[in-house]
Length: 171
Image 1 (cartoon, rainbow, N blue to C red):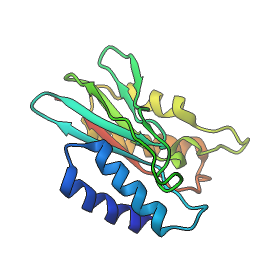
Image 2: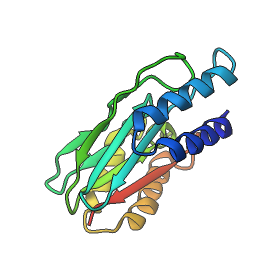
Image 3: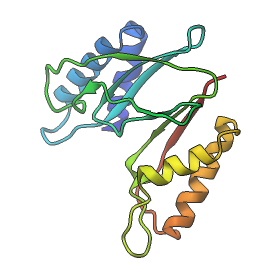
Image 4: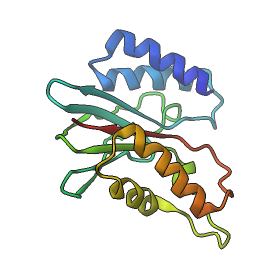
């Protein structure tokens, strides 16, 4: 299923990369048409425009990526719609966020925030934010291993789900 989503996303983006809503509509139709009725996928689609520091994005039912502003304020990137593959004609909404030097964008899978310790307590978005915010002076590639180290220490090796993190630090 994921390879179908990835292939559809690559193809749709090659034709309509500047129109995120059109990209996700095409991916959604393809996934819906080629998958079993109870199969779907969540995804976040973003295009960063470096010259203006604008991130155009759509969120198809995925954990909302988080923008940590240099001043410590938080913004969740939720605009979009349903996971792809559920509704054949879903209309996705695109949004944009202005990013500034020092801002950090965190995109993550549920395996990151659902990592649990021995008592069943989840690391959560709070654990992710604490770790990322505590490393404010670091580059994006330095933040990722620190997130995994902190999550692993919290869960004491009990983390069993997929765990993916993407970090963008604006310069």
